[in-house]
Image (cartoon, rainbow, N blue to C red; front, top):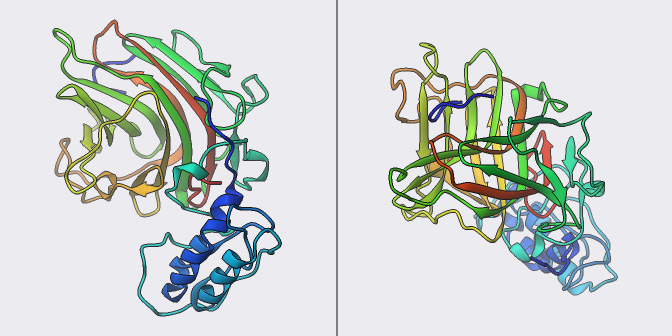
Amino acid sequence: MALAACSTSAKSPSGGGAAGGSAGAPGGSAGASGSSGGPAGVGAAGVGAAGAGVAGVGAAGADAGAAGAAAGTGGSAGGAGAAGNGPTDGGAPEAPGGRDFSTDRTTFFGASRCAQANVQLCEDFESGTLDTTTWTVLGGGTKPVIDGVQKARGGKALHIMVAGNGESAIRESKTFPAPNDTYYGRVFVYFASLPTPATGYTYSHWTMIAATGTGVTGEIRVSGQMQNGMSYWGVGTDSGMDPTGTGDWTNSDKDPNGKPVAVPTGKWLCIEWMHKGDTNETAFWWDGVEHPSLSTMPSTPHGGNKTVPFTLPQFKNVWLGWAEYQPTTEPFELWLDEIAIDKARIGCVL
């Protein structure tokens, strides 16, 4: 694929049980908040540092959450309690299967969890070979390989290297078309290198995730921009010269509170995204924390064709990998692991 400027660690295993047990008490305090209380109090039976017991949702969550924390390793997973009307404590909304939307990074890593994930697609690369019935390799340069040099879970991850301007990625269409033209994604990424400033190279735009479809031209991107010597997350699109599109633009991260954190190297990150085509909305989470400045809707201000609302296509596929659009000879390197796609938010613990 031709690209023009801006177009187109070793870890100790820590499974979801620990998150479930230790989250029992918080689930209780959130019980009165209704649906937001449930997931925080979910515990898996018989596992977890603090033990897991009866899981509760809503008003019943207070008693069930406390019971979970006290039950030790002998607890059992319970059902949903009645919804309450009390104040929320900021817990994540309830999801199918009681998914854990914890921001505790100690619960993210360890053994592969794809076999138990119960999502539409989960790729852990543990087979050591790329499943070509699911994935298509993109880019004319160095092809992605699977190795164990870096990995977020299990023993292997997808290793991507690109020398200078170009693209190397994998694309799937198996989960599309999505119900209500809406899908959620989750991926772990480890950047060994990102763009750095050099003479004549003070700005760079790069993309890690992009989805395309019909009805609207261009990619819907999760990307980044190097500005003032640092890379920051961004979202946007490139509809080229299509007069019905919003053009070529990227909105940069402003969270938290107008003081964004630069994208780090040498560290595994959990990135989630939502593309909600039926209402033309997108969302972005980093390590389980939503960044509202990277959410979009049709009226979101942007630097493209300002009079055209930002609408989404009928999604047909999504790719993950690396693309950099400015002329450079700098090498880029990253790993991807445990890619998941589903019809509901996935989180970083699942």
